[in-house]
Amino acid sequence: MYPKELLYTKEHEWVKVDGDTAKIGITSHAQDQLGDIVFVELPKVGDKAHATQSFGTVESVKAVSDIYAPVSGDIVAINEDLIDAPEKINEDPHVGGWLISVKISDKTELDTLMTADDYAAYVSAESES
Image (cartoon, rainbow, N blue to C red; front, side):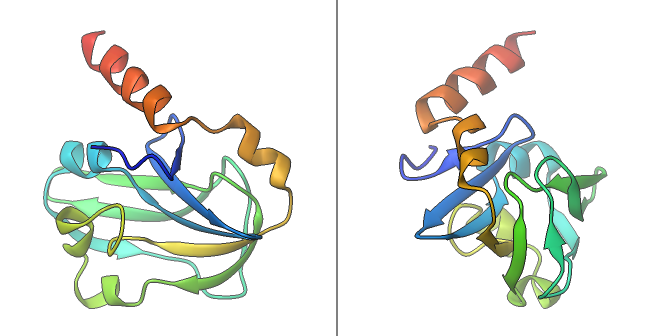
């Protein structure tokens, strides 16, 4: 359910690290909770992401939710496919539904993220409360 090669946040974002770059998106759990996604607001390439701070929003038929950066750095790419087809997040949140790519400025921030197993346990505990 949660790809093992990704890292996760308590705010339900995922991170895929490739060298000094991190691709970021929302988890399958997050998109499931939101329902049908109808709009995504993303930053511009060249903007800065700051760990734990919002970098955009996802709007669904149920709510508008902030998306938080798991790591800090320069935004080097955005998933422009989502501008015209935000539903790609619902269809494939962990691959085709990625949101931004960041050149990581502080790799120690990755130490605060959860593994897939930790995240699955976190989601399970969260849904029980």
